[in-house]
Image 1 (spheres, rainbow, N blue to C red):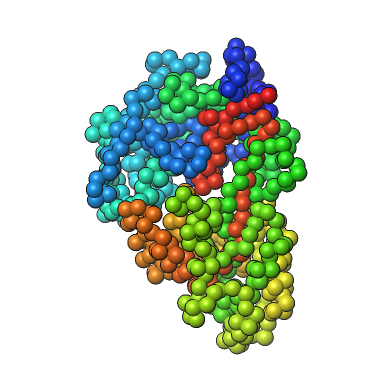
Image 2 (image 1 turned 45 degrees about the vertical axis):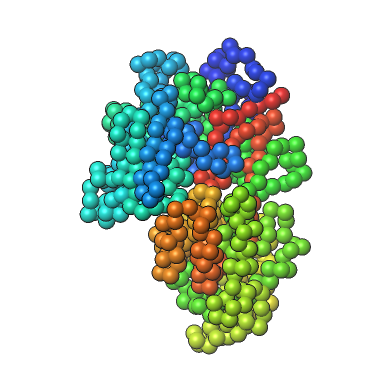
Length: 550
């Protein structure tokens, strides 16, 4: 529980503080479903790492609990008329803190101001081949980024320059409306060059190799792969509390071995927050529950499977799903999906699907009619596909599904449609989250129910998942790529409504991702807990404003 402080050191320290009526100065606990791979923002890409990093570091920009972009270390910024130059002025009251003497007090010799040079160094690290950063493509719009990636320019030529301690300039190769959003990603967090080199290659790998410029700093990080009592203990970075108040005194991450273990911790009261796709309204009726309609679940087929990847068979499968019959069958957290972009994506201050209805996107390019349930079309495509392959029947297979993402009972609504129409049986195989994505990447599947979301709250973030280098299920389309390239160069993403619709239509008419369900994700807070902010796109939990009330 938030009010119960588990670590002995936490008890000693918090005992001297007066618990305030606004819910401040408590300790919060969170069960992570795995050990962070690294706390190096320019390298880490797993959700466990990014959650911890988001509480240790502060970037130029941040998103609030409504998903809106706000200044963080940036005091203000200007954008040139052509959209190719961003000039930032930084605050002078944000500090790096490394608790060298481990007394939890910020002594003057343990503090360093965060400067524009720290951001310049961070971005150069992303493009330095020695870093092996997985984040380079996120910032491909930067001047010379493409040339650096293909090896024709040095990473020091990147269009990022600190003009002084407080002035930072980004030069872009082309206008990019999503650039500001990308500065709130963990990859864009600053890196102090002196501290980085002082760690002698250990940066972000242990508790002695991490300096904080955010809400909390690391007191201890213990991980034994053969043990169970693994944790990361963090305390409030008081020096950075002056500008942007941090409410908790302590933050403790308890490292579990799976999402299931993390869920058990919440049910036992040893974790203050649960992220889940499964929601029992009666069970959590006394909890604060936040929901996000940020996923589209769709059928993908291994392109190496000649039978099911046949174009006519894919079309038969798409036209053979009676989605309208789902209406009275599906639970509150699921609806039938006709489009690619889920309704939780915001656009013009409303759901994207209110602006561009999914059925408007699901229009067949061959006859101009809706891509929806049609037994006649389904059987016609099926017979054409079977004749072309000289087959009498298709092999029985199983759909690969990630565990705990959805109740597979509702997937039977789809497979029963197919069995009735085509006479073949398709079973269901649930596997752990990590195994699911590994098998997709390795091509060890025939068909899968693939959960799709974006990295930030914009239609383009979902569409980018279909770029050849960004998906592991084999989708590639030159026509689609040209539309996405056009979108990326928009000065304002609000101008892209027709392009988004066009991109969706291309994907839907290729029948390589067949949308089936829109699905909610849930953040459930322990009783008495408030303001633990979850970003369902970056997957970060932010505890800076977390409060507890008796």
